[in-house]
Length: 238
Ligand code: C5P
Image (cartoon, rainbow, N blue to C red):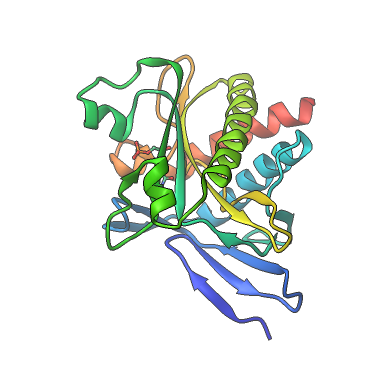
């Protein structure tokens, strides 16, 4: 019998009869402000599962190791079991969100080189920002593990800047999470969807990500459907 191992803000993790494989179940919930705002959106589970599946397959095809095995239903996928680093690995190409509020900048400035930020995953502490030596001191990740995560994040950034560009969107920023497989390999884990990145339409600059929900400026389901349709179109051409 599969056991429920973990319930996150938008996903559940279940055991399977293979100890190295987990089943992820997406839910229709969206949260903002570390869970302070919460709502359900019809079709969100299917949309996130499908978008994340396409992105993880695209990254794997281009040499990024991930936990992804396969999608098994509209709302479920199988992933390799990993020991997660309690870190949020954020890359920013354009100023937005907390970078803009922290430094008092308007959103939209394109950076000369991507900004790289690390946050400690902790609901009680509200995910505080931390630097590389803090992460070593807290026994969260060694220098070498952090370097591997940043190297993979840079690869992901380059690949996804190109993919979203072809789909008519700017990849403004995104958050990744990493885990370690049984054999010690560091792989990209969690998901990649408009929940954990910012996408701006290249022409209109309109928001095509969870900011429509965070800021109450649009219809989340309609926007996520548009993102999916655009990336499907680009990937079908390949
Ligand atoms: O809020 P902030 O500007 O720091 O977010 C940077 C990027 O990281 C955004 O794409 C946001 O969606 C993502 N993020 C996330 N989960 C968090 C915090 C940020 O996916 N807990």
